[in-house]
Image (tube, rainbow, N blue to C red):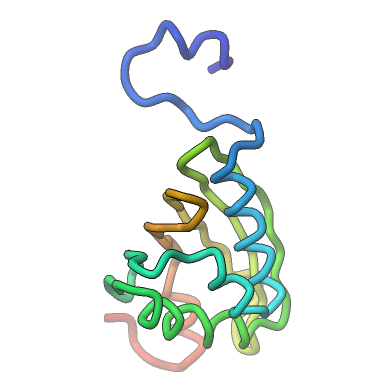
Length: 138
C-alpha cells in the first residue's frame, strides 16, 4: 500500500521507511549489538524494559543485560538487513553467524519512549541452535 493510500484505510497504519526517532534509536541499538558491543546497545534500553522472546519474558535492564550480552558477544558476524519505523515503534531484521550456526535470522519489534527502548519483542527460530547443540527440540 502506498503511503498516500494509508489515510483512507481503517486499522493500523503501516510502518514507513522514513526516519523517525524510534527508527534511528533501533538502528543504533542493533548496529551496536551486531558489532558485539553489548554495553553500547544497552545504553539505548530503558531501566524498566520488558522483553518477550521464545525463551520467555524478562523485565528490567539487569535481566535484559543477561539476555543480550552472551548472544551479542558470541557473534562471529552480524548484519543489519533493514530497519523500519516511525516515531514510537521500529522493527529490525538481522542475520548473524555464531560459532555453530550460520545465517541465523531474526527480528525485533521495539517500542521507544523518551528516547529509550521500553519493550522488545524478539522473534527468531530456536531450532537451528537446538540442532547445533545436539539436543532434541522441545
